[in-house]
Image (cartoon, rainbow over all chains, first blue to last red; front, side):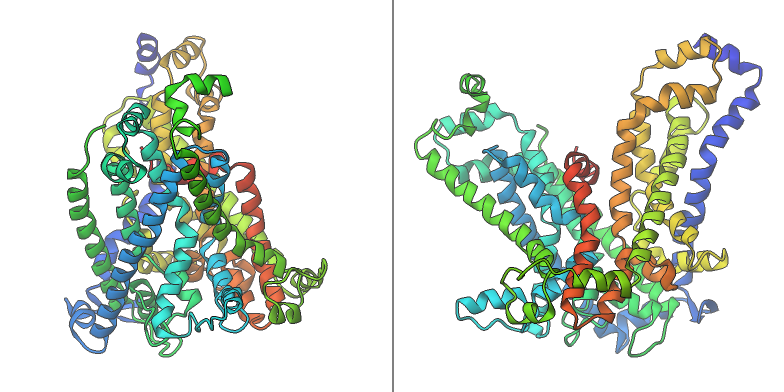
Length: 310
Length: 292
């Protein structure tokens, strides 16, 4: 400490310069590409846009349009509803299955490491690969899924082409893509439970179902919190899979439309209209940010309150 | 192995014979795990197998194995598409972004972790605040910003955006790691008369390598796989990255499924091989932040 002080006290400005030099590049990049765009995002939503340039300041006109005026209003709520459906479907399917697999992996039966690697493999693939792969596999005539169903005499539907099955099929592809992530996060939570606790329960004659629901579940609350929040944020960022498995318009018949697709169409122009509106797009982005932010804060407060210190 | 585990009560739950009915139950659990493994791997198996099939084979018998090793699809991808260009672009953008993230984040983290200066806490807060914001929702102002800087449709624009996105968590990880390094090493180097740059570069940073690997993987995978930012920021075909190029490709060869499956297989190949080699680091890097 004394050596440091002696060295640095005389050329103090040199030390400050060195620190400034270390901080500057990261700070400049963050200011230019994160802080400034985020600060102006709100501002842009109050302007009417002509192409890329902001025109008149129109107060809440853009917000009013997307929330209360036809035809935008219907599109907004339709997309929002699908995001909510996707969130709950992923909570039950993806995270429910992940919980089961994680509990199975916790047993550390022979080969459990291989299974960890396998379940996480799709996670490292791009959503583009996953989307196109499943689009081909789910093809009504030549896809593997319907060919396999055909072996049992079942005529598979046009999974992505008909309204009742389209959104569900994309959710399924998402479960396949991402399930390894919650699995390993929940597994890490389970591994922090002391072996003695589980062992004692087992000696008392508790079965796996009792152990999973009465002991493991409450004790992995912190991991459940993280998985829930990430699933929520992920559901509201849902973009690549519906875009490539269905299309930009949320076909068929808007049954796969979600907020990010709707935002992208509004801001950068759809195939059918070709109109792009940065004002309305910004208003949508701000609303999505506020909605996701508010729900996340409330959910975190609730989820944290049910966590017990281990 | 057997002797140690049988005497350790903590491990006994993994021994099938300890409890009545446990063997049967473990069998059921193994069956569940293998069923899951089949569901995870079979689609990828179909993808790889189909890349060796002709269209006629794929359409008439989608479930069958290929009749032989047919490389016609591969030749077509090689000669008729920009696949290699896309892959090269992805490699360039990912490498440059990860390198830049590592350099600037480590510099900033080093200043915050190893020196005492006014407002160092505020600086850390500034960098960390970026962890919670979804930059995708600021894509309109970001687009306008890049337009103003003439960085739209350039490698540099894409690289800088990825770098900005990667800095917050990289600074977080590196600061935590660098703070934990002992002060003695630094002190003794200082007493020996080494200057600050030498201390940082030759004494401290070599010790931070494990954290750098985590940062590199945590950023490289999402950048390599990203579709959203190139979709909006890149328009020239010659600059497109692999995920974006793949969509072009899928549009051009809609009916040529052999070529499509080959394209998907080739796109998945590099990252899958790397993952199999470094699965421990991949899993640690990608779940970092959600664990602990």
